[in-house]
Amino acid sequence: MSVPWCKTLTAQTDSLLALAVQAPNDSIRLIHLGEAFKQTIFNDPAKGMTIAVDFLQVAKRADERDDIAIGLNFIGMSHYIQGRYDRATEYYLQAMKQAEANADTLYAAIVLNNIAACYEISKQPEAAIHAFEDAMERFRQLGDKSWMAKVSHNLAQRYLVKKDLETALHHYQNAYQWFQELGDRHHEGLALTGYGHYFFQKAQYGTALDYYKKALLLLDKQYDPAAYAEQLEHLANTYLQLKKYKEAAQHLQTALPMAQACLALEQEVRLSRLAVTLYKQTGNLKKAFEWQEKFILLSDSLYSQEKTQVLQEAVKKYELEQKEQQIVLLNAENQVKDLRLQNAHRAQVLLLFGLLILSLAGIGGAYFLRLKQRSNRALEEKNQQINKALAEKDLLMREMHHRVKNNLQVITSLLKLQSQHLSDPKALDALTDGRNRVQSMVFIHQNLYQQAQLTAIEAAVYVPKLAQALFASYNFDPERLHVHYEVDPLLLDVDTAIPIGLILNELITNALKYAFKEETPGTLTIRLRHQAPDTLLLAVQDTGPGLDPALLSSETVSASFGLRLVQLLAEKLASTISVRNENGACIELAIHEFKTVS
Image (cartoon, rainbow, N blue to C red):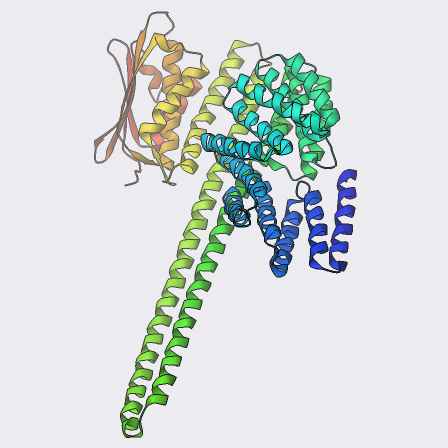
């Protein structure tokens, strides 16, 4: 889909780059490159990076110290826009060092503001606030009202994140007043957006909507389309809170292509999640499910993008280290050659024979040394290849578990959506049981891609998490039930963990449904113990009225689907089932076929 304002900016940027090529000198060339960068950075960050690198090269060639600082800052901005915050901070620090060496206090303060933004995005809120306040003090001393306004707006954003709404509003008011005095309509609109955030957080959605609308009229769509699209997102979210679904859908549909055109993947993820909520609330389950799938795909893309970036940076770092090693080796070889030449010139005729013998010995030693070095390098390269292959396998395994978990969650979401439109208690019960069975497997794959161990499940972590999810699913009052866990620190193989999880799901569900019907408090005990080298003991014990042992007999055909599932899974694990009634029911399985990971 084409976006007119992006085409216009592309044409303007190309014209500026053409002027830069034809410029009579580097000073004029830097002016054109600087303007091209400012028009490109928010719309095409990759192209902005190319222009920033060209700008820095021209500045270094012309030995323009002030422009060198600007070029370093431009590259930092390009990394920041593309989410590489560590690299951005690295270039910002270089730019600040250069600006301070130039005695350019204004530009040093500007770069400090950018460094503060990196602290913010890297989840260091206190460091960000401290850096912003430092920058604000520098701009006050310089009397630069434009930058005082921008930094005040940044401080407001940080305090909004901290939920310190009154301090945030104070900074938004200062920023708005200064931007008005400066006649900067675009940033005036951003400050008004902050007013909208303030009232939105206070759940005063009507007032928030008024400020968002006023802000949209002030924003410059051509200069900063990402900010314009984000404003449409705020309006859609506010209309949704006010249950004005038609208006919410209109703003959502306008924002999506703009976010896609600006390559704002994180915003696409937020907008797709907003669409899921919108269609759920309007009862359009088909649309809700379609957007749920899009949301998961976009989230996966964001996750894969981050992983790919990590791998690329690791490869670049490895290649750089290899080149540095080669340079050191070449320097060492050159030094050896120079030394030999000096010794040859100083040699006397009477020592010629002796020096010849020594030279031959040196050559032989160097030859064997090089053979050894070549062997070591070959061995090191093989180790690097093995480590890289292992890292890639680890990443692929995590990605696989991540995607399996997401697919299972799509199923649970579909079942949940379907249950909202059923009134038959038995049908609702069946859907809830099915959703819980799938959720027990979701937890397994979620644990696998989040933890260091990719082939095993920590029983002591998994069992309580599964039980708590079931309590929440059946809206069970925690004050009515005391849960006692007796779980050994076992690392279960996946093929063992899945059937054990499904068995626990059925036994705990059965206890919640039938053992604790009365309002009186009860006790539930869950055991998973290593009873012997070849036996695991799995047990669920309640203080309810008890259970007929015949229900779990292999000859019983009238048992519920859940209990028949327990019988089948028990056979898979070569288990024996026993039921006893002692102050309630206790169902025990002695499992003989299982795998643990040491």
